[in-house]
Length: 459
Image 1 (tube, helix red, strand yellow):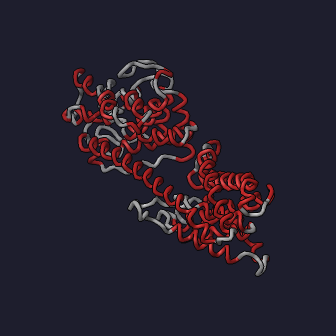
Image 2 (cartoon, rainbow, N blue to C red):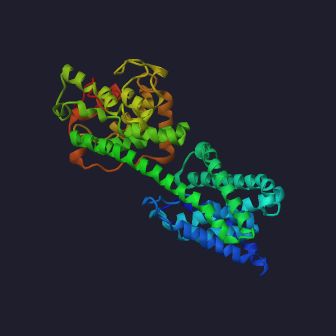
Image 3 (cartoon, rainbow, N blue to C red):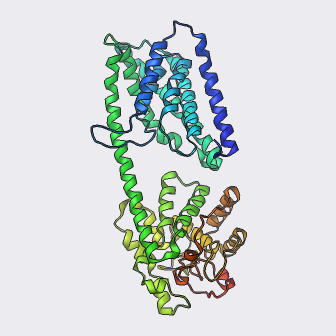
């Protein structure tokens, strides 16, 4: 847990302690408790968690797919709450996780699942427990839905807390969208778990409950296909960035930093997670239009002629044309086209002003300028973060949206700025290649203050 902030370690330790307290009464249940059922369900959940490959399709499944949560919800319906809490623990502790902070992740998953399962079991019995039999199935739907909803709500509350403690998300946005996104799938898992529990108690015995997992296995395949598509999207973005890096060595590192700063602003603004991902891609690809600009202009040392400057200022339109047919980019396409617009209407390519400029484009403009000012170039040293923020505030309302500038300042105050190191030989390669220098994105005042830089802009 050394890699985690102290607050996150304390939060995870507190969740683990609470889970232990929830499960502790199990020792008082005695030999008459359904220990055998608990052991079978715990083993089944642990075994399902080890499935990393769909043998029917050959797809490798992502970590923590959640497709086998019906096993835990079966425990909710079959077992006393303390025993139900124990069912999740072995499987969560042995399940594969990302290598970073692996031990903490395993403890966290075990604790949150134990707490959610225990709470759901208490609600199931409180709402109106009916005998688990086929004739009573319709009457069990309401208690089962309440239990599944509780399961989802507890996980959402705990996940929001860990986002604040471990990733320092703003409290006002940490829980946004967590419950709506998970409630529907958990209700479906709850229905599958109820079917398993009823079949478990039927005359056919526990083996009759196992076929219910077949649809869950199919859902694993669907989920894996979704992740495969996401991986293809990431590969597409990565290929475009690498192409720009080859053409203009300056952009190496700059694109990723602009993407990161854009997300910091977007998160402070309270944007939904799906829009944050689009915003990140917009920041990374904002200079993809450089692929259409002559290389000699991007790498030219010295002043640009008006004709050369006009050629470079076409790169937002080139970028928009390059990504026009990539459907998954969504709003990112407009951000790529308009990230050089100014709120006073003096930007390019279309001279939009104020709210006419797409929101994501206004975010990327601020992130782009900030990274340009805080990065070392061959003609000047990097400016301190405080100086860059002061320049952004000075140009807010004319060149930049003041709301975006305030959001960046608030996020930097909370998280700081830790740019990835860029080799000096690459940091200053191509004065003309700086997409956010010399008045086009970096404020005119900053450009005038930089030795050897003149207002105007190279894109």
